[in-house]
Image (cartoon, rainbow, N blue to C red; front, side, top):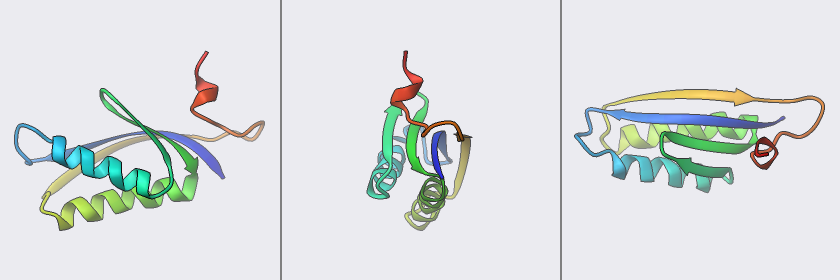
Length: 92
């Protein structure tokens, strides 16, 4: 099932700057084949719903394995049955 999502990955205890962890998370999302667009407070995603959930799980596993002790992720997911959801379709 196609979906759009917005996620906010928050590395906790990584120091004042979390730029390295955010860049790494974004790379993982792109490597998963998702349309991933960064914005000031998170990332917009477009793709198969299973791929979105799998990529978020991979972000957590990878960041933890690379030393991030705590991660909080906030996620909103949207699906439709009347047409294929897309990020472009959200713009007016």
